[in-house]
Image (tube, rainbow, N blue to C red; front, side, top):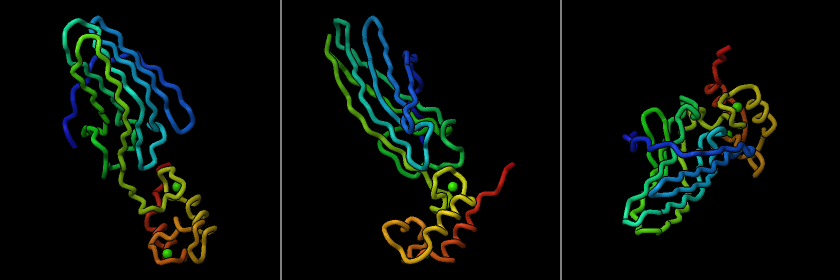
Amino acid sequence: MQDCPPPLIPCVVERVQDGYWTDTTGVCLYDTREITSFYEDNRYNISYVYELRGQVTLTNVSDISRTVRYHIEVPGTLTPYWLEPVEKSSICLDDDGTIVVRFEETLEPNELKVVDFDYYVIYNNPSNGADFNGDYAVDAEDLALLLAGWGDVTADNIQYDLNGDGVVNGADQGILFMNWTDSSD
Ligand SMILES: [Ca+2]
Ligand SMILES: [Ca+2]
């Protein structure tokens, strides 16, 4: 975990839900600089992997050289609290799970810079892989999937071979039961 850069003045953003992806368009117009962004991420569908990709355009509209900065900030509250990040590309993660991506370019008068980006965070899967349908619970739905994939491993059922011994059987069912999610309601 790290201390991420402090927030900047918020821009005008518009978000549209497009199935798995959330599409964001951002526009910041100031006297000295203009920033536009378009990106997509799966902030509302994080199932062990968070993905963020898109494009930011930074423009210096003043008549002196200046540094133009822009942040994309994704609240950690959109991530289930028990997901622990284990691997990430070069982005910042705060203690509360907030994801911050910082763009910074020093630009000459009227110069613009287009930045394409593609970032990810991989979270720990605390179910040892037994949450087959990715709904954050190991329950009867996952058990049904494992039972339907019973037998020697093929391309169709390999995900249910939790111990990797080439067969889906009672040993894998035992691992699933060990990771069964306690009911909270
Ligand atoms: Ca599940
Ligand atoms: Ca097995």
